[in-house]
Image (cartoon, rainbow, N blue to C red; front, side, top):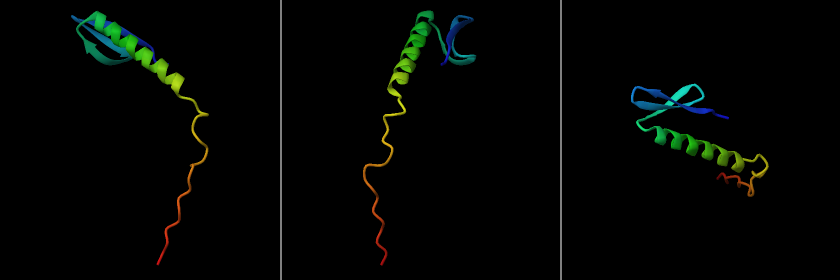
Length: 68
C-alpha cells in the first residue's frame, strides 16, 4: 500500500507517494484533499479486484479459418 504525505516547500505543498514527489499545489487544504481522494480510490480498487471473478476459459471458441 502506498503511503501518502505532504511537505511544505517555500509557499507550496508537495504531495508524496512513499518517497516520490508526485504533485505540487499551493494550498495545504487541497493537498490534504488530494491525499484523501487518492487513498479512497486505492481502497475502492482493492475491493473490486478479486482473482476468482474472471472466467477460466473463453465462453466461445474461435472457428478455424477455411483454406481454399
